[in-house]
Length: 141
Image (cartoon, rainbow, N blue to C red; front, side, top):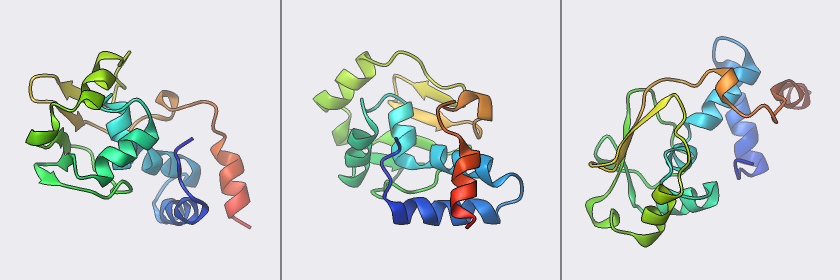
């Protein structure tokens, strides 16, 4: 669903298990905090794979600085934008036109073409299809 390989998945889980709190929820919050996922959630891309490509090709900025690492973990309060020369891309315009709703933990400024990661999502705002307890059980072996 998030387009991660096994090694990235394991690394992210290990990082989540070291954070205070429930490992499964921390894991979900880290997945949602990835730059490629937030670009997708903001509606700048129609898919996570497309968002990953936008980031990797250097079209995305975080707090005004170009970031080309899709796995970059964005912290609450960071502003995700597009580089000046990338704002007119057809792919981005089509994605923004097709956006249906914006997650409650994000804000988007249409005029500036940038979004803000306001806060970490609550578990109820995330996909109910994922059973993080099974993920924790699998990786705790």
